[in-house]
Image (cartoon, rainbow, N blue to C red):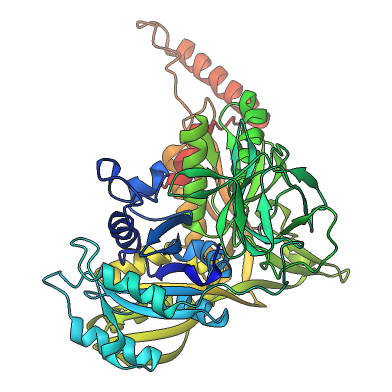
Length: 593
């Protein structure tokens, strides 16, 4: 394969700026997909991707145009999947930076652009949706030109809907994106980067790879350099966009390798594949993804526990950023503590477990990691509220903060600031950009999870866009709130809350439990305790049975004796009272019903 005829590139943009639609038109123009098989979002294979209209998994595809091989990787736009974008960029030499002509530069535009620049990729700026009646082509071109320090005439225009400008864009990819280069001469040494993988019941782990050096053929004996595992290639091929078998893959190409390995944990994103007998340096891989949000996942029926473990193992084989470990809860039984890249990632995994594996799940409130220093000098990373030490044992607590960038129209800056104040944000620079403001701020990660996205969208009528990245750990002013029902602690309801809002959260939680807990034969007290003090309390009255209902007239003392007997019975029952809280109550509390 002539390296000069290969171009590897990706499309990067803010969410919903038209990446997948542009990719559709490219597939049409290059005749990669037959007209009769053409549909919207061709590269979005997952049911959830089509339903939500977003890209979740990056997808590679090989196109042929004017004698050139064009390897495209379509990337997600949502901030939770920035890790997917970083992996895609490592496998290419150039990127199309797509900016919606109706919205202009958004928060995630800057985040993905910074990634591409750090990796030294060639950037091709493109405006999408130029056919829209709301398009502000000239204004947005000036915005993009200022951002990239280029001439506005160097910015391409396109429409994924009509196909306008797409052929010119393909020619620009050929002209501007450099062809692949190699470090090791000859084909005796193979180095292939693992940038993704999937799992098949029949074929095992299928590696998505970019060949940097050497040539790969079916039947070669290969080795994962990091894992140290050897295997023989059962099949190799390219994405067009479905998997298409090939005899060989040479340097510069992107394709797949069927390994036959059916054990989790062997294949890792960022590993280097080499010939089994080669001793050469590995390619620089990726920084391991770190969970940002934690939540516990329990099967509604404990009979499904092993099936849930198997399902998580399967998802881990196609989503390397998912982490999990077994845990046990007195209320909910056995389950798994799972780590996610964000709230959308949590939602996607929960949905996949329900749809693809038909599991009925209980998913707890999401939490984050806290670094707690106790009086014995020991530092512990705590990710579960139930493991949080008592207040008297703690010297200090540190929590992760995030650096947030928000783009908002000038008219909505006032309402936005009120939301930021309510979520403990520290506002930094505010820059003006074409009728909008870019607001940079810092805030605790726990506040980002406290309905922050919805409140920002509400305050700005949906016009704001935001992106965030993990910052440093800072001192936290938080405390453990415990819930007691009938004098018994229920760990499943334990939460870590801000000290500034602890009274408000206590009252809100007790009130909700008061409304959803069923009445018992005895009065049931619900209490929120913080640091040994009761901050909120309500009592559900007992079910009252009329023990004198069957009596008609007669001596009043008989009725009095029956009522006194009932009163003593209730008192005895109260002393040994135990409330059994079903999962339906727990679910209602989580859903805010």
